[in-house]
Image (cartoon, rainbow, N blue to C red; front, side):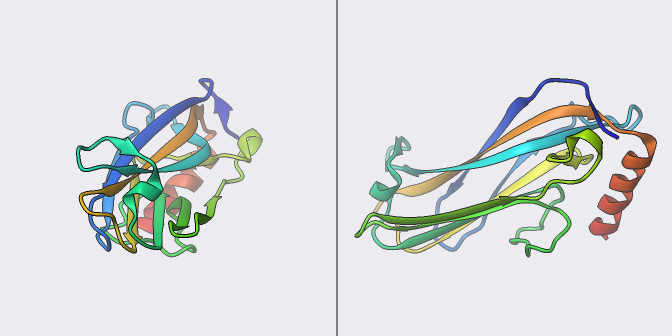
Length: 180
C-alpha cells in the first residue's frame, strides 16, 4: 500500500516541435523525489498537455497562427526512455499520451488524451513511478506557417509516496522487465 508523504505538486516540461515530422523530446528529473532505500516513489495523479504556437521571434502565439494547413500533433509521457520513437499504447512504460488535430481553415479541432493509473492501495487513481526521470516526446505532421513552430508543455500533478515492500518490489520488477 502507498502512503502519501507530501501533498500534490506540479512538475512541468516544454518541448519545441521545430520541424514537422521530427520527434522532439525532453525529460523531467525525479531524482530528488525517488529514493530506493526508503521505498519512496512518485505518484502521478494527473497529466495535462498544453499546445501553443511560437512565432518567428520565439514568443508564444495562438496555435492556429503557427499553422498554414491541417496539422496533427502527438505527444507522450513515459517512465523509461523510449529511444527516440513513439511508444505503442500497450507499452508498460507509457504513462500518458494525447493528440491534437487542427484545421486552421475551418477552426475545427479534435483532441484526445489518456492516463494509465496503477492499483496500489489508497492511491488507485495514481501511476506510481520508481524511475528517476520521466520522458516527454512529441511530433507533428502538417504544415507550419513560415518562421513558426509549435511548443507542447506537459503538466504533471504528483505527490511523493512511500510504498510497502511488496508494492515497491512489484513496481521495480515490472520496470526492470519492461527495460529489457
